[in-house]
Length: 327
Image (cartoon, rainbow, N blue to C red; front, side, top):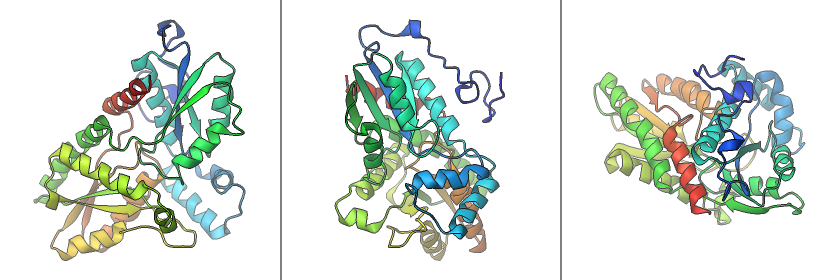
């Protein structure tokens, strides 16, 4: 057996491609005809794969060499991106819980969405429930995933595409379960309660101007998590992270500006929880754990972060509720 790259004990789907779900466990009434497809952005395993990965991200458009080198550098610093591993594990846990086949498709890396659709189409499934693992709906993410699944539109199954799940109660609970103990521990180290900064990936401002619901939904998720965790209104704020390197204005406020504003209010540290991501990857392991932490230190501040959802069983329960709601 190959060692799990995440250091997990027991079954490791990502390392060995062995699922805990056995075909004999399927519910013949429902699952023989229905499959689930989890969709994610995709991520290269190491820095050497970055140039090819970026060609998928841009649709073949050439990026400046300096941008490619910078992104490759970031991946080299984190070692490897665990996003595909965590996504496969999340799919395996959902499959085990629901006694249903769960496939994974990545838009920009292996396993590609197109390959997942072919695998599903090769079997007699009549319906596929597709869930994008970006809970907040944006045409820059969810819209592109739908297009990647639909392709030319000649699917041999009925596609039931989940547009959004930003307000799923169990999603808020999953984030709160990670937030509360880590925040209390960090606040004790700080000697005072730390202000919480909820974050989500930024998108181009023009996207929001054109009516995209993403910003509203990201802030709503933050409000639900704060309520579930028992945070007072004055104990948390919201910022957008990982603004793109392309031209044009991206939505804010930025994490950097938010840290400066909290410093001006007398805070000596901050606690960050990204609520737009459901597992660790470069935007968490580099942008938050390295870049934002170093920025905070230069400002004379300390930065802590909540553990990502990753293999959270409450996240699995949230995905299961979504699937049940589509039957």
